[in-house]
Image (cartoon, rainbow, N blue to C red):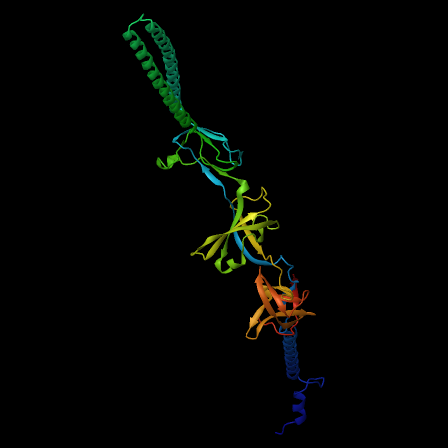
Amino acid sequence: MSLDQDALGALRKDGSGGPSRYDTRKDQRRRRWIIGAGLAVAALAAWFVFGGSRQPEVTVVTVQPPSAPGETAVLSASGYVVARRLATVSSKVTGRILEVQFEEGTHVASAQVLARLDDSTVRAAYDVATRQLAAARTAVREVEVRLAEANRERDRLRELRKDNLVSVSALDAAEAEASALAARLESARAEVGVAEGTVRVRAQELDDFVIRAPFAGVIISKDAQPGEMVSPISAGGGFTRTGIATVVDMDSREIEVDVNEAYINRVGEGQRAEAVLDAYPDWKIPCRVIAIVPTADRQKATVRVRIAIEELDERILPDMGVRVRFYEESTPAAGSAVARVPSGAVAADGAGEYVWRVVESRVARQPVRLGREMDDLREVLEGLAPGDSVVLDPPAGLEDGARIVVRGSG
């Protein structure tokens, strides 16, 4: 039986004469694939335009002018405030503390009484010595009276002997008595001297039980209380104190710093300096170098430098941490430095040292010729001028002419 071609054609069309349901689904899938591919291409293009060429964020600083004469900091060093006169006060004898007459922070005068020890035994010995001295003096007066009487008796017998009214033996006896009393008087006077010396010794022993300030200053430590034992030497294990207080002469405050021996040639006696306490970072204290201690520490490779504080203040306390800048006194040579730049802005490679100069939101590699490094700043001899802007701590991968985003300025 032959096939009806018209009937077969009708099977491939719907009743309205349009395309079949299979062809419609195929066209929809094709359109979705084209739209997805377009979106992927657009996303890739946006990444290349906005993500792949992202502008780096940098910190920008301004190039500073060269320092004025006498204002160049040639070195910085750290150290501590110290007191040249500081003493731990103890007693000359071992004894029990009866009273303490100070507290931490008390201002004391030289020889002011700080504490007293139990002196009952020594005081009794002192009383005996004073009584012995009084008895010796009384004995002297007695001998003096008897000697005066013996001398008068001898003189009378001498006159009588001239008229042969007394015997020679009577006169000799009178003269012997006078001589014996004179010798006894000398002995009694010597005994008085011994007794006076004994009294002075006992008085000094008594005074040793009074503890006094060795010089005017401030008490910074109270180390003993009434009832405790104190001794000039360590005794009795941990039950005996070797000191009762620490006194500091606040007028003797100065600064000591350790300078690396490689840079000690930058420091000299009388050199101007400036100190900043860790506790007061905004307070600049004028100072002068007193001396360079003529020895080095082989362990730390440093040399100790003593620095005088020109304006003492009660806020400056012993053992405070301090940072000191040493300034160059001489005038720099004309034309030596044209600017100063932070050390962190300088980079180097095989071609030499350079900085990234900022011009209209772009960076340009700028070769520079540098001088000394002083206090985290480098002298610029050539390549920059005061007022130029440079990148501080430039990020890796920065390229000449690249656009940047300024994160901060200095």
